[in-house]
Length: 424
Image (cartoon, rainbow, N blue to C red; front, side, top):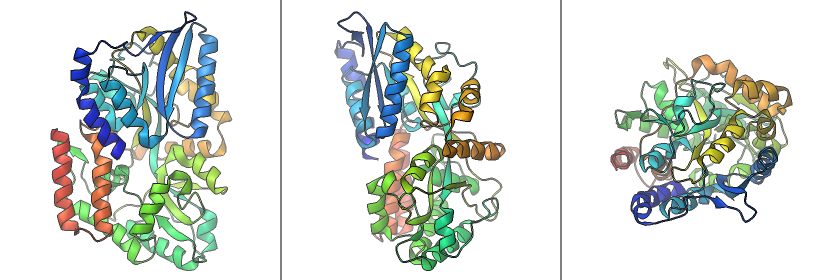
């Protein structure tokens, strides 16, 4: 991903700049004497509105603190944040993805939150997803699972039935997708594919491989080639659009995806995206487990933080920043506003308080995650360089599906570049 790749490059300059720059430490006092906290995050218009409501609720309870939201869309978020961090102008509270956690923690940009924020009611099994070298540099905002979204109406309109997601295989998924395309009106495809690293992680785990292993990529060339073979089959059997159409669809964003526009039967997305996708489609969407390889011993699915709350190590207002993060995590009022937009809350009391207020899509997400919890792998915090993986995987995968590179050549080069990114 361009923004994360650029972020890594810019963050590399942070130590030099912060060593010689005086900066203001990322916070200051407002003219009315209130403490000003800067808070960076990304997302959609609906997320911005929710977040502004949560900020207003926090300020009402803490009248001496003003929280200034620094909002941007996803493509530009990390580039902007890395520039601020490198210039010693980091926001007091920053939203990060798990892929960028090791990078920012390793650069000394994040405060250790161990014992600084109340985590007593949080899911203790999820907290390690915010730890680097034993320190709690980040706290998950909420959790989600990478799953298959299915449009039952589209599938049945093509004369097909919903699959049994406890037993279906990748070949059955490809075959069903092809049948949906052929049974449609010519404007619908059985599925849309994705190069999301989560998909590759799950596929590899089903083959007994870990994405990361002892500081290197643990995925073999054979698994990469088998993964790409699925895309090749989908394209050749018309289960999905061709490479050019899929690249165009992916670039258009979530709301223009095939399943969100009722042009696809299936699509892989995170569970916290279900609500927005269902709203865009105007139809009911169902969450399913991803297919498995026939001899898989496990699903490969894993519970992952949607994102993390972090605090700048340079903030001049650590107590106020901690209070704000504590509010976002532990206050039922914040939970009732944010719901599952940043993943289902990991605070058991907050989740219990808002459970009856969740819209149908969020209730479905909660029930789905609960139903598969015993089959979930532990999440792994990517090492430094992890933020570059999505861009690397996408580039080589696009080269293979478009015929620009052979799977053998692409697998070799992908692993070389990915391991070099980790090595730094």
